[in-house]
Amino acid sequence: MKKYSLLDLPFSECKKIFEQLQLKKFVAKQIFHWIYQKNIYDFDKMSNISLNSRKIIKQNFMISDAKIIKISSDEKKETFKFLLQFPDKNSIEMVAMHFKYGWSICLSSQVGCNMKCKFCASGNKTKVRNLKPSEFILQYILAKKYISNLFHKNITNIVIMGIGEPFDNFDNLITTLKIFTNPFGLAIGPKHITISTCGICPKILELAKLMPKINLAVSFHGPNDKIRSELMPINNVYNCDLLIKTCKKYCSLTKNRITLEYLLLDNVNDHEKHALELIKRIKGLNCYVNLIPYNQIQKSNFIRSAKIEKFFDILKRNQILVKIRQERGNAIEAACGQLRILHGQ
Ligand code: SAH
Image (cartoon, rainbow, N blue to C red; front, side):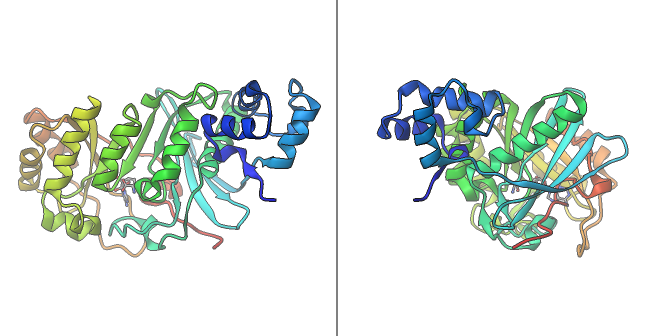
C-alpha cells in the first residue's frame, strides 16, 4: 500500500484522512506539532500520541527525506549554498543568506526549468519534474536545522526564487504555502514569503485569490516587447502590456505592492531611453523596482551593466520606488540565475 507523505499534506487534508482512518480529531494537531514545531520525525518519539494511533499512522504515513550532499559558503559565512538530493537521485540547489534583518532562504521550485530565459543558468537544463510540497518543505527544514546549529538563529524569510518557475508548479506551490503559513504547520507569516515569477499572468491572478498576503515579485527585465521577448520567451505568450495590466489587477485585488525585478545587461536594456520607457510603462502601478546586477553564467555573452547607478537615479528622479539588489553568493555561484542542477537525473 502506498503511504501518504505527511510533509505533502496541508493541515485540513491531513485532518480529513485521519478522520477517515478513525483517528481522533486532535491527533492531526498533535502530529503537526511534533513535526513542525518540535522537529521530531520519528513516530515512536511522539509520546503523547497513543500506541494504537501511532500504529495506524505508521501503517498509512511516512515522512519523506532528502540528503544534503554538498555545502559551499563564502568567506564571511553569510551565504551558504546547499546541493540537495532526493531519493530518486534528482537534485536541486538552495541558498541561505544572512542580511541585517536575519537569515533568508531561497528555495527552488522545480528540477530544471522550461522558461528558457537567455540570461539564466537554471534554464540550461529543461524541466525534469516539479518539486512536491514535501520537497519545498524539506529545503526549508534542512536549511533551518543547519543555520540554527551553526549560528543559533532562525530563518525569518523565504523567497521562492531558486531553480524553476514556481507558477509552472502551481498546485504544489499553493499546498506548500498552506503548510508554511498554517498556525499548526510552520506558522510563517505570509509577509515573510516572496514568490518570483517570470510573468505567467493567469497564475498571478489565481495567487491573488488564493494567497493574497504572500509577496509577489515579477521578473520584468525588458522595457518593451522587442527586448523582453528576446530575453524571455514567455513574453511571446504574455506580453508587456498584458503583464503590467495583470500586475495592476493583482495590486487592486490584494492591496499589495508588487516588486518588479529588472536585470541590467550592458547595452541591452540599460540605456537612459530604456529607463524612460520603463517609467512610462509602469505608471500607475503600485510597485517598487528592484534593479539586479547581472551575475555571469557559463556559455553566455551578456555583460554586467556599468550603468546601474545611473539607471537608479533616473528612476528615483521620476518618483519611482527603486532599490539595487544586495549581491550575495557570486563567489560560490549561488547568486540569482547561477543555480542549476548539477548531479542526478
Ligand atoms: N522563475 C522565476 C524565479 C527564478 S529566477 C523568475 O523568473 O522570476 C530569480 C530571479 O533571478 C529572477 O528575477 C531572474 O530573472 C533573476 N536572474 C536569472 N538569471 C540571472 C543572472 N544571471 N543574474 C542575475 N539575476 C538573474
